Length: 434
Ligand code: URA
Image (cartoon, rainbow, N blue to C red; front, side, top):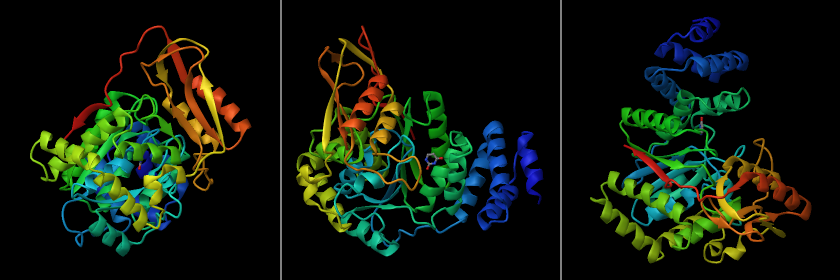
């Protein structure tokens, strides 16, 4: 086969065959096909798209590029969860212990934050001593014993995605549905779980800005998961404003703990209940929505979900006392209130902009190697639809110093739009695709 001819075929709107996609991915991972040719191919895919069969072949070839996890040593139903990424998204920190307390096993591989979106691995490192680099056997044993483990992705799991994602990131080819489907689903399928729960974010802070695109992405991922014999569902959730109030690593861990105590933001609670309820039904642990809801509420009210988080933190070398005393989490030296100069209603909050404020404060990274400050970020006191009076605090900025707090104040002010009328707010769960 000839790589250039295949690029031209796609550029001209042709459909690549299974063996052609196998040749391209195999050649790229082995180093025979250079970055510049794959960059051209990605751009051709960006403009010409891929049909469902091509997307499935690409997903399969990406899985073949590395190892797959064997979870058969873990008893019970194994679940994996993935979010397409957003701002203030601490869902996994609530969902995993909540489900583990109900007897579900979660073997979760997570990523670090990149760009304006945060990553679960960074957030968990807010627990002093916490390690996300646990190896295969320890990982499996922990999931079996405690019910869940959250680790960074190993180098050998879908190496093709690592290479392709790095290239997409610098060639303007991230936000294209077939490439997102194959990137996410190859990792989920290689991770070996029986049930795949997907949280597809939709809105200004997400890759998918429109509901239609989010729905298409969700439907295609669910189809690939089911085609591979896995129970798969997707919740489409709102990311037009940050999820909850806290944005920033340790601040989000605190908010997740508050939610496990039953004292978190209503929308975060609602999203976690929806995702967890669907998992309990898919796993056959509960037979009705009502039974699932009662079981989950019990795990929150009797403290068993919170204790599961502490068990996991301890097993991964972290200081579990911080689960019960959040003052032990990293704390920024400077706090600064963003005071409203106007009276009105919050019409919109630019979620991506808030993510960028967090990067400015040092809480997010622009390159994979940047070092981040786990203590910084913002806590929003006013969300869309809330009434604000002049002189009232809209948000608290947590910063390393006064200069970065002042610049964050300027940037955060630009993220808020106030108006005269109360905006209609759609619920956090926009749709469920099964
Ligand atoms: N998350 C992924 O893992 N891959 C994508 O392509 C987009 C979001």
